[in-house]
Image (tube, rainbow, N blue to C red; front, top):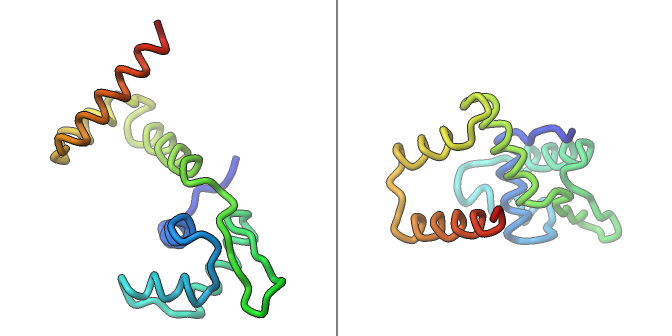
Length: 125
């Protein structure tokens, strides 16, 4: 099983998922826009993430370009499964009920949830 990305690694993955393949400088500038981040910190994190197979590095160009090796959806599924197991005793329904009761869901969110449930019920029939 793949290692779960740390919060800092997840921030970098978010940038790569949104931007696509990016140089260290591009990732640094995007992260630094939200909160102070060191360039060498981003470089070191990307090197660690390469070793963990979370990103791949293309060294063909002068500036190395990094790309996510993991899909956003796969990472989200992994994180949700882990959260369900650790915090909700394996009960997805308890997690969903907790999320809906603690956060104000928008009308759009609720409509999307209804569509998803309807589609899931349609598949199980």
